[in-house]
Amino acid sequence: MKSRAAIAWEAGKPLELAEIDVEGPKAGEVMVQIKATSVCHTDAYTLSGADPEGNFPAVLGHEGAGVVQEVGEGVTSLKPGDHVIPLYTAECGQCKFCLSGKTNLCSSVRATQGKGVMPDGTSRFSKDGQSLHHYMGCSTFSEYTVLPEVSLAKVSPEAPLDKICLLGCGVTTGIGAVMNTAKVEPGATVAVFGLGAIGLAVIQGAQMAKASRIIAIDVNPDKFDLARQFGATDFVNPKDYSDPIQQVIVDLTDGGVDYSFECIGNVNVMRSALECCHKGWGESIIIGVAGAGEEISTRPFQLVTGRVWKGSAFGGVKGRSELPGYVDDYMNGKLKIDEFVTQDMAFEEINEAFELLHAGKSIRTVLHY
Ligand code: NAD
Ligand code: DAO
Ligand code: ZN
Image 1 (cartoon, rainbow, N blue to C red):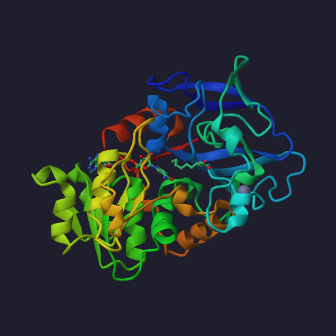
Image 2 (image 1 turned 90 degrees about the horizontal axis):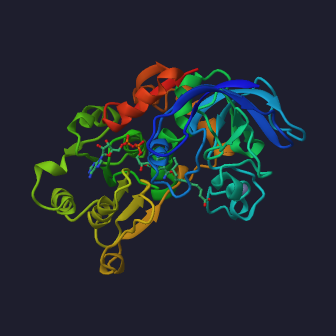
Image 3 (image 1 turned 180 degrees about the vertical axis):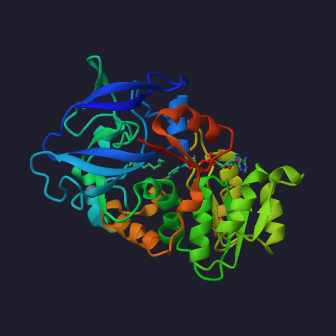
């Protein structure tokens, strides 16, 4: 099968738009025609070369939605025509992790996914005979892609694919971090560091959880309008203060917030996010992905005195069992997605979409095949 795709040949270089070859699905695999994909900060991070798991050349992209084209031998839960969202966090339902009831991290395809290949150790993508790596088990920057059956959530065929593609990462990650990881309760105070798609989704989740105060923090004040639309009540630009930002938040909130979320990937901000939490019970959730080799630090006394540090991957959401419900919530008007889409473009404009993200001029650009 020939497919339109964007190839990341090496770190730091723009993607090359090309026609690639995509092999059909093997046993337990599914070929999907991606209809829409967007660009997340994590794609930019991997393309920059900072990702220790970054394999090149590769077909990047992990936030997408499409239609099943063909299924391999033994695939029982999906058929051609089904509408699906690719999952970078699979759900096999059978591994130690899935059965633990304690995490959404599934080990079924983890080892090969990290190496950029399918579970049998090979790739389905090539260009002029040269093999290309898969990315995060999704590779949505190819119109036709192949995934393990356990890495696809079947969703309502009524839902617009060019909106629900954002549930493949950003929107779900933020809302899930509030609901599943922090379990924010009504009346709680919340601080959100970084107002990209992840931070805005955290704000939406905090509003859904009936938080009493939602403090939106970003060095780019252009982000505050949208944060207000999602339910933020207070707006802080760290550049406007000489005090450390954690002190500013502690002063604003009579001793600190109940929950904070780091949605940037900056280890210094992670420390601030922990230290702006209330003594005795405040919890800080790390969502941002820091550069390879970077470390977090704080004084242990911060933890001894009751602050808690946690992390969240894909919002703790089990994709195959829970994502269909997120899609239904969107269709029923309980979940906002349209507001995250700041630009719609043709797939061929993918490098411009990366530039907009870097320039802080987009929340999500949706690319249409
Ligand atoms: P984004 O680039 O769109 O948004 C980041 C925001 O942080 C921007 O608005 C920027 O102005 C702001 N910012 C930068 N430095 C700041 C500082 N020092 N203080 C305050 N604000 C600052 O990114 P995104 O797509 O929303 O992703 C955010 C992070 O979440 C990235 O690190 C991404 O890799 C990560 N991520 C994690 C998961 C997960 O499952 N844990 C999933 C998706 C993305
Ligand atoms: O199971 O060891 C593991 C890792 C699972 C991958 C979770 C990645 C979450 C953070 C990456 C951001 C994705 C956009
Ligand atoms: Zn599993």
